[in-house]
Length: 430
Image (cartoon, rainbow, N blue to C red; front, side):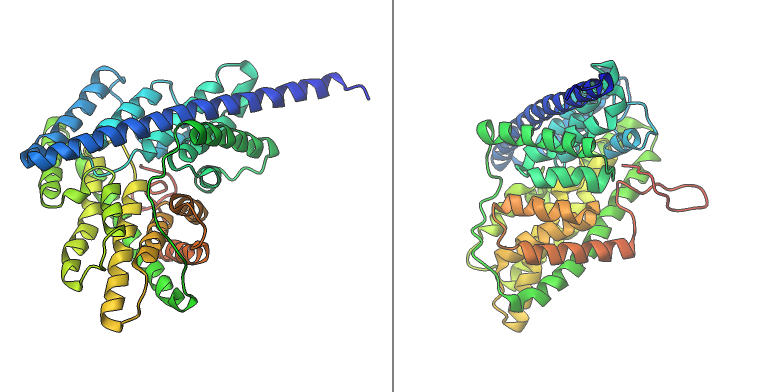
C-alpha cells in the first residue's frame, strides 16, 4: 500500500520527535550522572575536612552562597533561579521557553549549594537543567517547536531516572507533577528519553545510593505503618510551610549581602551542632539505617531535634539563594521520622517492629506528601531500596501521607503562590 504525502510527513515528524527525545535522554543522563558523581565526591571531601577542622563550617556556607551570588550577577544575567516554577511555566504555556543558560546555571549552583553545606539536594537543579536540555532540543528544528512540552518533560523524566536509577519514577514524575497530557506521542517521547537515560546510566554510571538489607514485613505491622503515613503528612506540611515562610522572609530583605551573611551564619550554627544536616544528608540516612543495636529511647531527643531542624536549615538555604528543592530533605526527614516512630512504639509497646522497614517507608511517605506525587514516591523509593518487598506498605503509607497533607494544606512548594486578599492560588513560587 502506497503511503500518501501526509502520511509520510507524519512519520517523518514522529521519527524526528522520538530521535530528539532519545538525544535529550542521553544528554540529560550525562548531565545528571556527572553532577551526581562530582557532587558526591566533593561533598565527601569537604565532610572529611570538617571532621579535622570543625571551625570551617562557619566559612563554607558563606563561601558557597557568595559564589552563587557572583555567578548569577556576572555570568547568568543577574536572574535568580526559580526552580520548578520555571519548568511549570513552560509546560503551562506561561513562558516561552527555558533559556540555554539555565543548564549551566542550575548545574553549577546546585553543585555549589550542596558541597558547601547547603542542606538540600541536587534533584531540583537536575530537573530544571534537563528540562532546559529538552527545551533546547525543541529549538533545533522548526517542526520540533510545537513539541516543546513533550521534550521538556522527556528531559526532566530522564534526569530523575539517571539520579536514582528509577525509570518508572522518572516517567511518573513527568505526569504527576508537570503534565496530564494523554497524547500517545507525548507518552512515547517520555518513555524514549527515560529508556535512553536508563541504559546509559546502568552501563556507565550506576551506583546504588543505599544498601538496605530488607528481608520482609509482617501484616500485623500495617496499622503502625498507617500511623507513620499520617505523621509523615503533617511533617511534610511543616516542611512546605517552612520553605514558603523563609522564602518570603528573605525576599523582604533587599540587601543581598546582608541576606547572604545572615543566612549563612544561621546555616553554619545549625550545622555545627548537627553535622548530619550537611548537604544532601544521605550519610545520615546510611548511619541510622546501619545502627545496631536499635537506638535506645534516650538518644531519640537528638534525632527529634534533627527532624525539627532539617526543614528550617533547608528553608534558609533555599531562601538565601541556594539552588535545590525538597527531594533530598524529604527522604532525610522520612528516614529519621520512621526510625523515631519505630523506636518509640517498640519501647512503649514492645511490638518488635523492624526499624529499617520504617526508615524506608518513612522516606516514601514524606516525599509523597511533600511533592504531592505518591506514585513517583512509591516507585522511586522502591528503586532506591533496590527491591519491591515493601511495595504494599510503602504504597499505603505514601497514599495516606499525601491525603493527609493535601487535606491540611492542599499545596506543595510547587503549587503555592500568595496573592492579595487570597492567601493561596494554583501557581508555583518555588
